[in-house]
Length: 137
Image 1 (tube, rainbow, N blue to C red):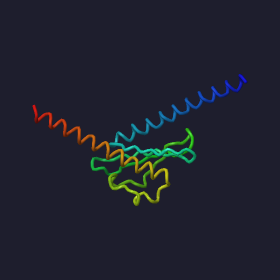
Image 2 (image 1 turned 45 degrees about the horizontal axis):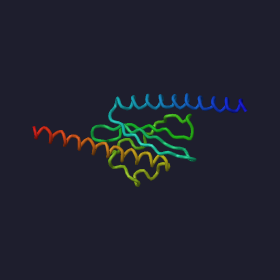
Image 3 (image 1 turned 60 degrees about the vertical axis):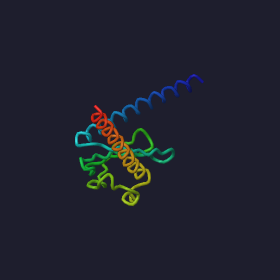
Image 4 (image 1 turned 90 degrees about the vertical axis):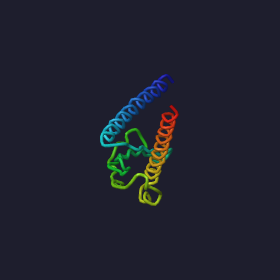
């Protein structure tokens, strides 16, 4: 019985270490993409099917410069180049444009678009509040 507990603890520790390594790999790629411009991140969880995380680097006009994705079931999923959307405006992405993508990747891309739109809305609201405060002073 003790061996089973020790084996379970060892497997849990191994999973934590490998998860940490995957997170560090993700952060490395995120930093690399941020050197080119803003990055929109979308994710789609899969319980039984492979999940996906998409990193879309955009320029000042929201055109996609470079994309990368992590897709897989386990912590061994690696970062792969995802250039099929390069040159397309991020804000123009919808179900029709993403129709040829795998289901989880499509969900992640559309989630990145929605998150970026929310981010821009918050930025705009913050700018409006700042401007209103400056005019009030």
